Image (tube, rainbow, N blue to C red; front, top):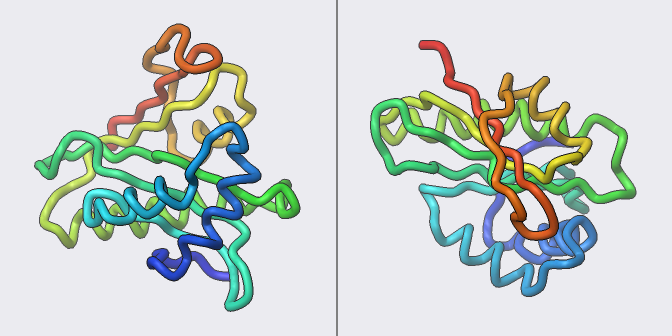
Length: 156
């Protein structure tokens, strides 16, 4: 199993994972396609082998290309059949390194990382342990509940 940058031929496979992880959302392939078209601002990475993709992650530049850019873990999904195998943790840590390199190769530095998640989501602990983020704010009544803003200013 490897983690690699996704390409347009992966859209259908990413969509299959996305649809079981976020069943309440619609038009998965349109969303993935539009995010993929925002490259180099946003980059999908996938976890899998030649035959299938078990998980994906989307990283985005949050505040424009500048010195000490803020990057955001925009979305992550691991197919439930592969949950509990450490794929999410590996996807986050390995793809974060790849995305930081991507931003650096564009001529910018990553100064901060952020992620949002629903209050009570078990993934909060995963984000804290892999990205060193901590609670920085709450958006009340966001979607179906409160949304936590997790943030970490990266030491130079």
